[in-house]
Length: 399
Image 1 (cartoon, rainbow, N blue to C red):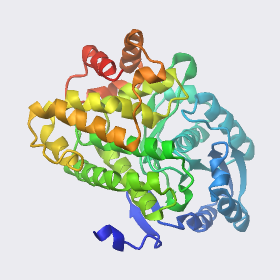
Image 2 (image 1 turned 120 degrees about the horizontal axis):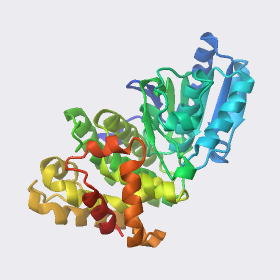
Image 3 (image 1 turned 90 degrees about the vertical axis):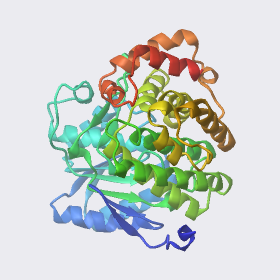
C-alpha cells in the first residue's frame, strides 16, 4: 500500500483554514511559529494546558526554548481538566490579562485547545466572561491569534472552528463555532503521542470516527465531507489495532493523527448530529467520562436509527468492517451490530449502565440534549427528525 512509502519524517503542510504542520518532529516548527509571532509584534503569550502531558511528552521543552530564543514572555495555566469548565477559562484569562498576552497557545488534546480558543476570544472582549460566551450572550467576531500543539489523535480541534466548555452548575456542555477561532498554526507531531495510554488511544480514535459518521450523514453533508469520512474510517480501522498493540509505532500514530485531522476538517464542513448532541449531556452530568467513550457507547444505536435515511453513504464508509453491505434500509440492525462488534474487538465494551446510567436517567438526559444551548443546531442537522422519542430510544438502546 502507498501508506508504507510516505516519508513520515518529512514535515508537510496541511492547508485548510489553519496551517497544520504534520509529521514526526513537527514540534520543532514552534521555533518558526514563535519567530513569526514576534515579527507580528507578539511578545507575550498565554499557554493553556493540562496537568502533566505537556511536560511528559517533551513538547514543553521545545516551547520554552522557542520563547527564550525569541524573547517572548509567557504565563502558564496548567489546570485544564478533561471537559474543561468556564471557571477554568476565566482563571486562565485573568492571568493572561495580567501579563498583557497578545496570543494564546493550547497544548494538549481537545480540552486544553478548546479552552485556549475560548480564552483567545475573551482577551478581545475583556468585559465578558466565559459564561457569557457559552450562554451565547454575545457573538464574537475576533480573537487573539491561537497556536495549537496537539497531543492526541481524536478531536480535530487543531484545524476547526469549534470549541466546547462546560457550565457545571447547569450541567450544560455547549459548543461554539466561530471563524475567529481557527488556529493560526497547529502542530501535529505523532512522536508526542506515543505515551498515550491504550484506553485514551482508543477513545480519541473513536471520537474521530464519530466525527465522520455524523459529518457524512448530516443535512449539510457534501462530497468533500463524505470523501474525508471514507478515508478516515479506512485509516482508523487499519492503524488503531496496530497502535494499541505497539504504542511506539510512529507510522500507526501518524496515520491515526492524519485521520483525526481530516475528520476534523470533515465535520468542520459537514457538521455533526446525534452522537455528539447526546454525548454532551452524558459528560456534563459525569465530567470524568471520557468524551470518546461516551460517543462509542452511543454509536451503534445512532447508526441503527439513521441508517435507513443514509444507507448508501454509510454502506460505503463502513465497508472495512461490513464489506457485504448493499446500502438498503433493511440492513440497519446488521450494520449496528457490525459496529458494536468492531468496537468490542478494539476494546470498547462498556455500555451506559456500566457507567452508572439507568433508564430512570433517560428523561433528564433527553431534556439536556434538547435544551443545552447549541445542541439544538446539531439535532437539526440529523438525517431523521430528532424527536424527543427518538432521542430517548437511542439512550435506551445504549444502556
